[in-house]
Length: 218
Image 1 (cartoon, rainbow, N blue to C red):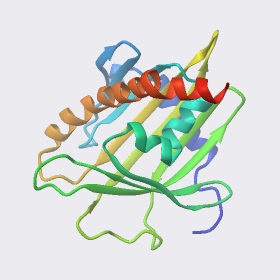
Image 2 (image 1 turned 45 degrees about the horizontal axis):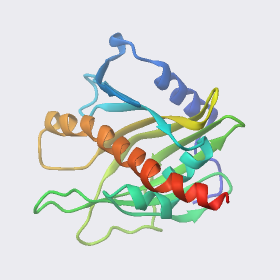
Image 3 (image 1 turned 90 degrees about the horizontal axis):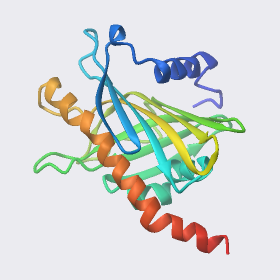
Image 4 (image 1 turned 90 degrees about the vertical axis):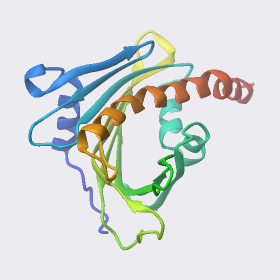
């Protein structure tokens, strides 16, 4: 893969537009909300699989610390129990090749793996990531696993004004796990997963990571 930026400014503009849009006319509807999260689903006639958008408010970490939890492999695997493997295969100046393997936790159903181009950006108060589906000989298919498809994946992390002990994140996910069930069943299950993810993340920060940060700071 050539060392060129695979994501343009217009791709990040789209990410910000998706973050702001909650218009029912564009297919968006509120799926669930609770302490620290809000999940929205976009349903469109031209897409079998829905786009899921979740706003998180994570207590006990700064934006940079939340970024590390999400994208540092050794930290991500500590709280994301469904993530069997998370590693960067190769790094370039503008992007990285990311390989992940996800446990399906369904009897007789093989786990799924994914290969994406991981493109980060950062400003003094915000961090962004776009992951884009990638086909590459650097990551051949693994026997016993099914290679899934990342249709859309993006993240926006921000400082919380007036609170140095919290960070916000907007997480987008539209994925084809290539399972032998109707799309409406996949959509129903997928829309509930961000809540479980949020709980694992916040519990890890509250019960483990915050104490580690405090000890490290002396």
